[in-house]
Image (cartoon, rainbow, N blue to C red; front, side, top):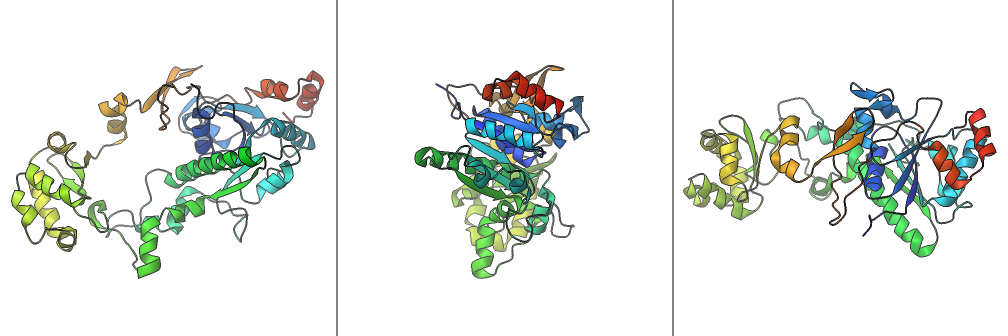
Length: 396
């Protein structure tokens, strides 16, 4: 057996979070991801994102997004840098970038620029607002997308200020979506012999994630807002409830689960109570049901309720980050990966969520800046004089 993307070579002109997150999926699944970093500015800005570091140019942030990749230094703004890019493209399956929308064309990273060197090349572009339109030149980040796409109006308590997600969910979903776009285009290119551009933007993904809330508004004019206790907008009980020592999230998102819940909390009569007999009735009387459930659930701890409800009613404890990562189930599932590291021996990261039964995914640390420059250049042109000239001109 082999990994799904073994033999696939991807040239990645990337930095920070969204792009590296996407290509890390591909590297985890066996692709050779060659990360191009500018030698004049310290490489990927993610290397300097603190506050925690394993050494110079090796931040915890960088290690979180660049596992299993190679790094070469290359200045694409110099003509000789473009020459190296073209040599790499001849041997590659795809070029991936996450640059401002107007930059890929300027750096010659589009299919139009690269097809003469490899007509099968796939060029995947991840940007803030896309490569066309009024905002192609705009910089943009995750939190801005959450704000403009309405997420902050949906998050938090109704009487509190707007709130964003606690993690950069748009960056991560856009990286994953771009990886999907790249692999999809690669399948097409292998079938047709012709590559293409693929575009994904933070803004488009943020809007796409509105999903059924968008459908409600576009067809019924319904503007969904925040609900107490992070409640589902239409299904209940599906929210946070108080326990003796904290909180539990219960989701009776099928009618049958409410009856099971009532049995397990020793309140079977609630299931046939006209106030709670179906989703519509429970939604109408949600505040009353919340108060009643709080009263019952507050009599025992979250762990005690999980022991009673787990596997019977969809429920979860409300953990902090430490509790989530130290969770015995998470550890047993292999969610945490120990990766060899030259300075620390091993470091802990979260593992790739894609499982390939029978195969162990690679676990190589994020590369040092330019660690693979010479080896990669020799793989495309074993010419010492050429490499020496590139070094003299500070192209690499």
